[in-house]
Length: 467
Ligand code: 5BU
Image: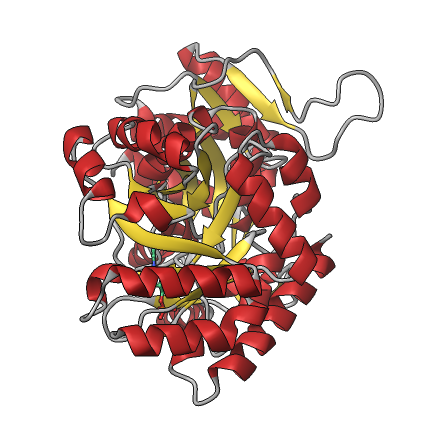
């Protein structure tokens, strides 16, 4: 018999795997229960489980082991001693005396940790630990567990960019136990059906999470040296709006009409000038006049993405001459920090703020967690010219940068080309965004002005509420 299989049978014998009727923490009634806390009573078992966990990570490069408190602390301790790997401990609560550290141990920023939990169900305990240790500057690529309950946690973690590895899935456990007559067919089917019918999705989990206190606009203003950021925050505070209208219409006339209508309710008007079929400089002059009259900034969402030499040309070249009129532009950092460096030279002269695209809103975006973190680091390094980032669920650690978020619509949902929408309240309160970017939610409405007013109200109230 395989070691893994023999170990599982022992776990069942010792009451770690239990079948029957149990009430879970969530109030749900479950036909099975996994109580790995019992393992501390059986040192040999702890050793055998730890050996199986080690198999998952033995070829990976990492500096620290971290167990999710409390159940996995014994696992991380055992692994640490067996394989001579340092361990860090995440506190469950902040200490009242002495240092206010949330992570105990000896570590440096940029070091890698593997996080361990006994069971992954929704993924929430794991995510809470990950947030704390990442806030201390540690990096995590892999998370491991003894059992994947197959209820959505692994896919939630993977959506966030982690690789989740487990010794057993619940399906494997059922197979082994059934083959060894430890459970009957009815229990097998009941348990599998329970798992299938009780999936906790990523979106649902996000909504359930507690709001994290976020920065207010005045704090960001105090922490920035960037003149464009200060101007933008002044506008937002004066007009009490955090709305950026994405004016993705196709003609000059439509664009001017929309800008005129939504002007009083927005802080920023965002454009894609290369999709205006009759674009000319007259349009720019008229838009500038409207921007002045209604007090908003002009944001050309050009998403520069080429080598430095080319983005400089694209930034200045006719017919768009973006550098001459835009207050804000977007830049991808797929070519590295060099795109930002190149644009910076012109942007500082022309008083244009850069927004780094760190994470996209599409369902199959390639902006992985690794990419996003690097993009945020570039934004942080270049705050002289960078106003903020475009991202969905992560803001820069530095208090001087703004977080812009597209993919926002009151009705939520998606389009049929990959765009995914979130409700503004959820975005401001739960994810702590600073400005929402709304396109079709406004300009496809029969009354764009009224819609913009509605978004303004909802967005501002959600911002105030999160404070
Ligand atoms: P929508 O109509 O609200 O879906 O328009 C969204 C706008 O935001 C559109 O102009 C996009 O170019 C822009 N956008 C986005 O949707 N997702 C992203 O990740 C980034 C920009 Br970056």
